[in-house]
Amino acid sequence: MTTARIQSFFDPATFTVTHIVSCPHTQRAAVIDSVLDYDQKSGRTGRSSADQVIAYVREQNLTVDWLLETHAHADHLSAAPYLREHIGGKIAIGSHIRQVQEVFKKVFNAKDMNTEGLEFDHLFEDGEHFQIGQLAVEVLHTPGHTPACLSYVVGDKNQAAPLDVFVGDTLFMPDYGTARCDFPGGDAATLYRSIQKLLALPPQTRLHLCHDYPPAERQAQWLCTVAEQRAGNIHVREGSTEEAFVAMRTARDATLAMPQLILPAIQVNVRAGKLPPAEDNGVRYLKIPLDLL
Image 1 (cartoon, rainbow, N blue to C red):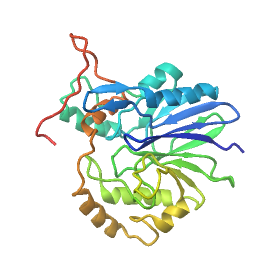
Image 2 (image 1 turned 45 degrees about the vertical axis):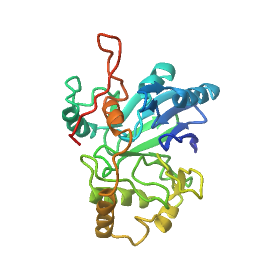
Image 3 (image 1 turned 135 degrees about the vertical axis):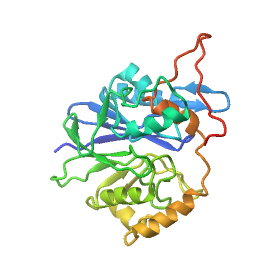
Image 4 (image 1 turned 180 degrees about the vertical axis):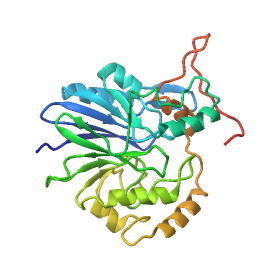
């Protein structure tokens, strides 16, 4: 029986957690939800967060097979192309990214963008299986926050060892609750049903979160169990109904501001993290649609 080795890095600027999952027997690895630093005021990008990942991979002598995205993030830019250049790996996301591309191709009038997911090296289908060395991974389609959200289930359900599940933005720590559902293609009822798939996993299953927004009284955390979520999640604890969740989520989402980096991030992330090509003056530009959203 092989147990995953997991190293996580928290980016306080975007509250994002990047996970590196590796097989201790083969040294094969996957990086989940990487971060490209971006300063909105200056428009400058940076690689310090991604360089932490590269340093760890090299220190541990890992071979990266996969650069996995749980969805097209609206709160940070992906560093997947930069990581692929330096440590290898295939960039992968769920096949429903095509729906997301269709929406944002229009928003950004992005004539260069196809809507077939061709920017990615691989598109996963619900229920698909793959390997990280000797580690078995199952793909779960868990939409609701966006149409293309995935969770990655690492481990063998027939073994006694707890599963490790990387849940993206479906769930947060129990004291913070669940993801918003007001992005294009998002749906609160769909998210509730996706979460129920996760909460139906064995109680000892370890859930690795993509974000944490800690209150003042605690530090950032990104690991909990299914049992802890069932007992304490403020939005979907045991006994919560779909009707009550949809009402709560809809009302709450109506009060939320747009994510600070949504316009820079989404136009990059639906292109698998690729930055726009330089124009004839040698400068890259991101688009900001006015009075549209």
